[in-house]
Image (cartoon, rainbow, N blue to C red):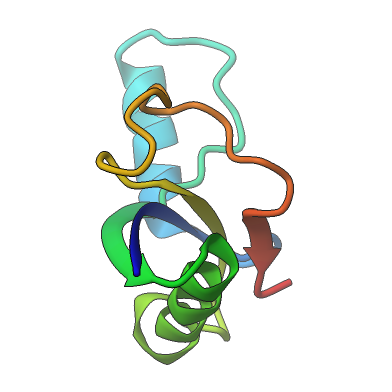
Amino acid sequence: MSEFEVDVRVTPRAGLLDPQGNAVAHALRSLDFEGVEGVRVGKLVRLRVAARNAEAARAAVDEMCRKLLANPVTEDYTVEVRPGSAAGASQEPGAAASPETAVEAGA
């Protein structure tokens, strides 16, 4: 088994109201930050997952999202999988995942 670091970004579905996003946009305008539109507030869930490969880690996390981490009716999510610190210490935090490991779901 290998260890993988996984980022799950959960956001409100396009077209649905986002009260938190509206509140942030209003607060930014009240602080004189002009030109801010389309604010959407979501969440980031960061996990370490043991799996035999990146595809298995992504599949497990996708199931976690469908069952718990995201509401499939109101939220979309993306999953980014990268080698864990022991397996891929050379990868910088925040570095883009390869196309095989970054997926978008819920659309």
